[in-house]
Length: 335
Image (cartoon, rainbow, N blue to C red; front, side, top):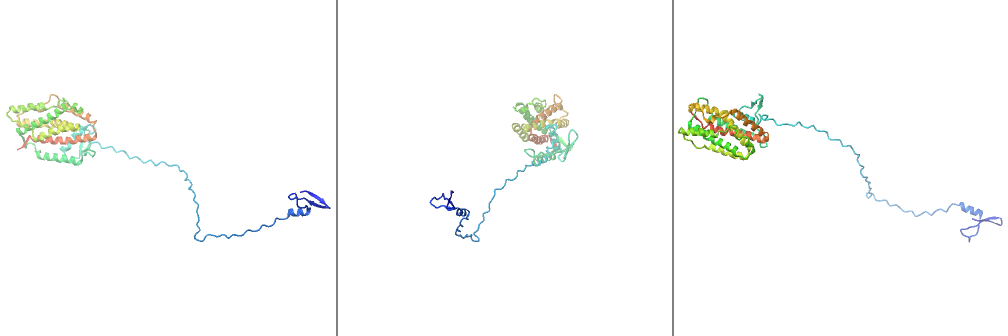
């Protein structure tokens, strides 16, 4: 802004518009400090609110905040149940031959529930369990059949009398059975049977000599009985399918003959043979030692058998005594 004095008045030039005349200083100052003109109010617009019931409120949803990580507590250690070991069978600690001895005792005394082992401790004679083992029903059948057989042939001392014909039949069936087991052991390729070859227990040749002596006495030698033939066929089949089962019969046939058959032979010699001692009841060595050797070999071999095999061995022991009982009853004729 340029100021000039004209005729004593202070004038102010207006550079924004030179065409305008200079303004007096007082007017310029007054215009500088004057209030701006008031604004014209705009037109007022009415605000329409939504009707009742149509108002919708939107509730904002927030994403859930992450839960604080809690350290996982390890599950409480459960107490392990004590391991249950199967109860030992009577004689199991010694071997399967000893177990079979208990089976023989139980069959002889089926009403007894406890028997004593060699250590003098009483042991409960339990039946075998499941998993292919001897069942209670099967064991009861063996006991029942054995009891019936004893009732049929059980006579008191002094009331029975062996017959010559019956005793020769017994020798014929015995020769067939001993021929069968000795042939199987000698010819089989099964490694288990090799241990029992030439054991010194063999009886087949001895029985052949006795039968020849009876033939010389004019006594007819019959053919084997049906029960003897059936037992020989059963042994042959068993030897091919299951070695433990066959060896059960093998051992028990000799065991029964040595422990019981010798006593029977002694009575027969006194009653009908005028004291003649048959070759069937003679051995070249101590028979007790020969049987002990076979028993130890069987016990050692059975260490490699499963419990199922052992139980089958015990089951077959009962069948063996049944077949041998049928053969012995050929001797006896009631007076």
